[in-house]
Length: 191
Image (cartoon, rainbow, N blue to C red):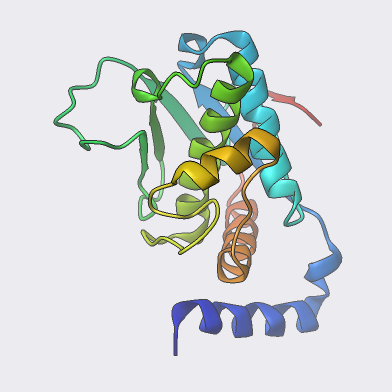
């Protein structure tokens, strides 16, 4: 049985048992070294991440000055030999510490801050998906696709990409798992 189907069956059983399908879930994301991104680009990226996750009933909140469920670090000047060709990477199997690294200076310049923000938001949403799923796998379509093509980039200009059903189920399980091990945050932005 495929992992997507197994996750779907498990999630349906959990929904039936506790009614969690109708409950909004929340995840708190911390940003480290985010000052390397222009304010408008970062604001658009955060809005894009929030829209992508809102589509599946997960509210994303941003933390500053404290410890979040999942920290995201913006890196610059990383040699091209480190994760060659990657815009970011996640450590889905790690239990603590910074689990998502975004190579900010590797992001292509799409010509406008709005498009740069949408692309950065998709990169962050993708890596967050890996951490929440707890897996290093990719989907055939959407946010969790291994490599986006021109059609994906065209869609990003209009509306965010979405998750596959299997990804949705695994992500919602991951959010619940992270909420159970939630850490305090001094200041939550966006609630």
